[in-house]
Length: 231
Image 1: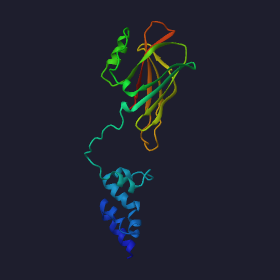
Image 2 (image 1 turned 180 degrees about the vertical axis):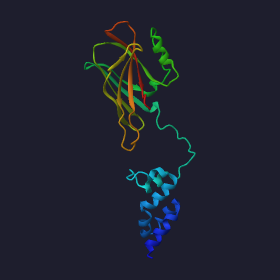
Image 3 (image 1 turned 60 degrees about the horizontal axis):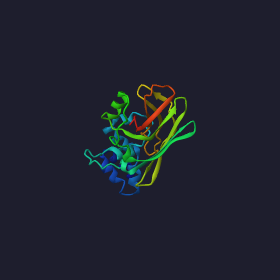
Image 4 (image 1 turned 90 degrees about the vertical axis):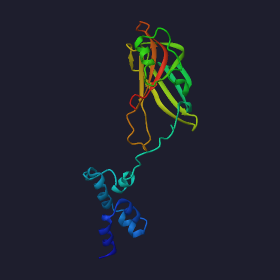
């Protein structure tokens, strides 16, 4: 019996850590130990369902190496980013004419930084004072937009610590105006790096908050709200 045949008879009897150690012995052992069949046998013991797919989208060696021994208890890392690190660049247009253009420091969007004006309908007041965390900002000076005009918005976010910029909303149209809650809504889907293949379908929303003037021809905007409803 050749040495290759002996190794192929012994390797299936080893545990994952021992099989991994064999790859460091010599080139011959490494080439044999990396045979995906051995790793499939190990995966079959831990995750039998992974072996039911005749053409899995992964190698069993990589699967086992990645997941076989995960830490059960991990220390929570501090937040990697905070509003203090961010600046928001917000621009509104109505039928192509610039309505509002402002650089907003991240902390200015924190809940509780401002009080909605008098005359806000109860539904809006309840929404703004609710327990959920919201990114809101007063619009100063307030402005009015004819109900028939097309309103669009773009929002860039810059990290001051890394000097990187991301576009979270690009020329999105406010195509949904809910007069019962006095909000006009626009959104874009966020685009993520291919390094995060399972992160998708998250939308960045922005809402114009307006007063109920009792007219159908004007929207009197007093504030805005940014949210990520799908997170």
